[in-house]
Length: 507
Image 1 (cartoon, rainbow, N blue to C red):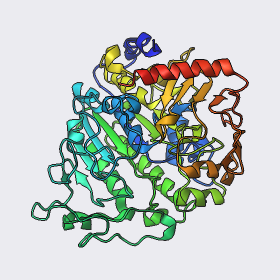
Image 2 (image 1 turned 135 degrees about the horizontal axis):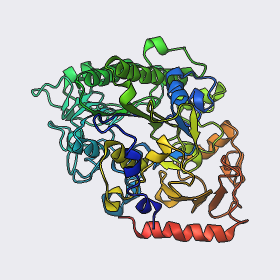
Image 3 (image 1 turned 180 degrees about the horizontal axis):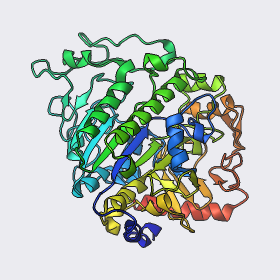
Image 4 (image 1 turned 30 degrees about the vertical axis):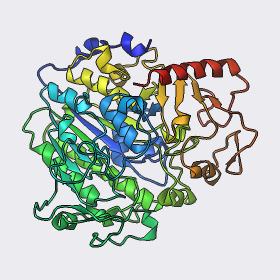
């Protein structure tokens, strides 16, 4: 039924272009809450991103790329597994950010993109925000933190176990806390409980953080500095790359930028025209530059594919609102934001750079879901996948290195914060089976803040007489100004039936 089955082995022809004697390295950079309008190459003027823009100038920029979810945790599930997040947990799905004591959300028996590379002899590593849980049953934060990244195909992991706005405010290296003291285990004492480590002081403009729940692992806590996260992660990743000694490698770099709290290193503060939000984006751009400089230093720049994208759209939190008031549009003119199923919640930047393989300065309007990276990376690594192994993933390598005359993907599912708003894209049509965007209440109000009009909205509120569902022609109206459900009822009915088919086969 899916076009992916027809294209399952298209990679064979494409692989003929690749040097069999020297497998290409792959670096996947996954930004956090970076919106469609946050980069210079996507139209930003208040934020300067020369390193990322250079990837686009020398590679290919995609205009119709999407995270599988408008929410961070399910988006990461889709990225790593090639499966829509609504299929997770036996069909119950993953819809919201993972909690403090959540177990590992990906079954270790599930093949990930890291497993694909590892099966082909690659060294594999993940750096940065994990946010997919640890252990089984319930995460008690006692070492070793297994199963975890190392049970999903990664040889090495270093980063934040949850998110930069939530405890524990400490790094994890592989399956232990960085700086771990086995005689000082982490203990959950409740929200700001007795003995809980105090949070560092941040300005109000930096945005929200969850209070701490933990005492113990004092040395590990002492090694964590909110303002040094970006430079620490960049240093760990570049050191690991330098130590590969010519062996092919895969790096998954999950940046914390531009998720709140906005804590760029001092040298980036005040450098943008979009407040701390923009300064944090400047730090992200610097990280991209450091990764690329390292590739050049170790002589691997010409044999490396870099994919740069984001886990979901931008969010109108403290930093996002402040940036908007300064004239910066985090999601461009797209309707909506993080957590919601309107385009601003999941249409994200995606840039591919690969010297000699990807034509410089090109732009693609191919429909691209991040679940496609599994099949695409399998093609890059020379690993054949059956239709069952590909599942929801489609090989987009021809869209990276060539110019397919026809769409490789013709439809996709996108999930927001609320299951009621799981939506279907089919060709030019986007169907949402309910009113609103299925995100946070403030998402609708934000349309007034940034002046993104929609026919169902008046003064930042859903109109009482708005249609029961939504249909948009994205070819004619990518900014979703007009709900055309009542003009095309037969299209809406077909879309509703197709969406029901997906729901009936959630596992």
